[in-house]
Image 1 (cartoon, rainbow, N blue to C red):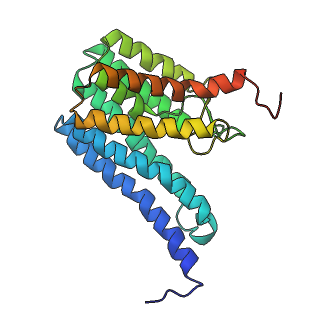
Image 2 (spheres, rainbow, N blue to C red):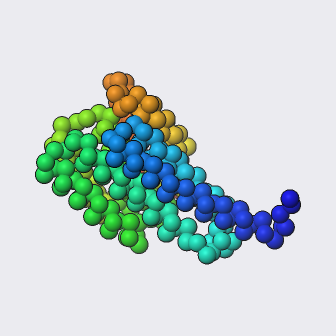
Image 3 (cartoon, rainbow, N blue to C red):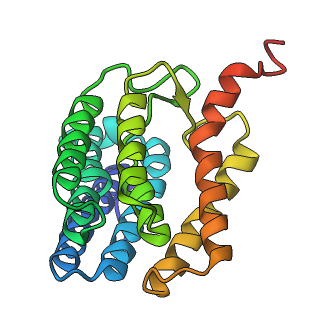
Length: 238
């Protein structure tokens, strides 16, 4: 059946909203896996949601969803799902896993959930170059690396504290797709990180040393590239 040309842009834009909404389903599947303490399966579902989050934004801009499907607020929908998959479920997993025993576990999940809620409501979250102002609450990525490496509890707690504070500091963190500067490096590194994360999940998070090193190296780049860009002027402004 041929779709009338006048309806095609609307249907395409609506399909992007529907794609974004699948993240809620993947979040549900992830938290069910977490409730069973099946951390590899939980992370596979979170990585599927992560992949959807990586492609729905460019599609939304391409099909101009704000004009062609304005009934649904794509940014609000995206933020709701991001809070579930980036913050809430990883925080629950960190607590349920026992990697932070006793008061350290309670402290970490309270810090992560509270600070992230404030950050997600921050109207200054994005910078003019499409980077993030402050650590963007990607706890799903951080906690996957923690699961894969299993550092001592106090090291994990310090990592949580430092990143929570970094959410509100004038530090830039690159967006792999939207930050144009160094994108030819950042995007491949983000894709490599995703492949490494899938590999770690398929290994039941029993990661060999080489995989741990690769996860750490790619994570450090993604965390630090924006701050380095603040220090090193671009050719356009030099």
